[in-house]
Length: 334
Image (cartoon, rainbow, N blue to C red; front, side, top):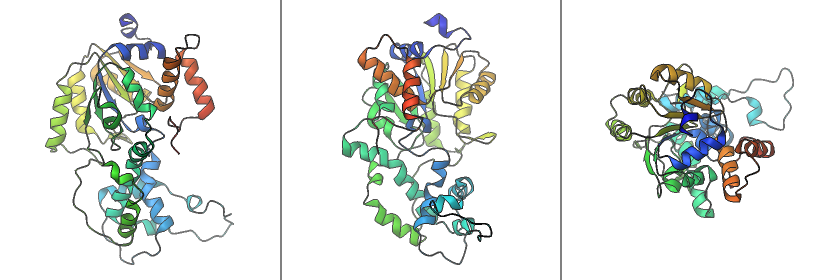
């Protein structure tokens, strides 16, 4: 297995999971690790703007400056009239709906708290229903390792901390935020532009070079010498040609320059990140695993628990993907 990992050819999925089961390492988990459970990509940005457009009854006449996170939500939500009027036919000459004029009035506190509510729901419902998402259950089959978690949903801590050391790099949201009772509070914030105290989350904005708490977490994580580094659904928060998690990226490059171990990047669009890291680290042992983690984790657990020796993990992944697509979490939480 060691020989395979130090060649330039990509390991098979069976080799990859065998390696993770027998070697301690360092995992970097991003939004893709929670695919099907928490909003990611465009869904992340449009949570609050879309809810505001659908549920707000009136809008203030005056426009005041918005918080940078609110502005980013508005800019990246890409909401169209068809998102608001699903069953109506728009005929030529229909007056354009003032979506972005309304969103300029999106209250900062509401935008942030609504997003936190959405991100906390998976952990809240998992507790209520007694379920364990397989995207995180699968970590229990791996050697005890360190997990640098860049999500806010707290799922890595909830389901992996009994076996692995989990560090919440950007903070996490209390699961009570996912409760239905919070909606009354959100309705008030949606109606009135109320100022709230900071919550110490690094959410939707670039990391700060002066954030000492982040530096402490990074220093501790980077002080270890893992046998492998596995990046799951994480891109250092790439935004266009830049990276929001610029502090993390700088520390990562400094730590793993000329790294002798294997670095796995598990994401359906992992090529760009692999090429960037390969150039920055000056190594050729970075392996793109172009798969969806939620589907891959389910396929592995199905094969592992049933001891299916006749079907490769690649075949199992293809079967699950063909059956469910890419946006399901297992157990399926509706």
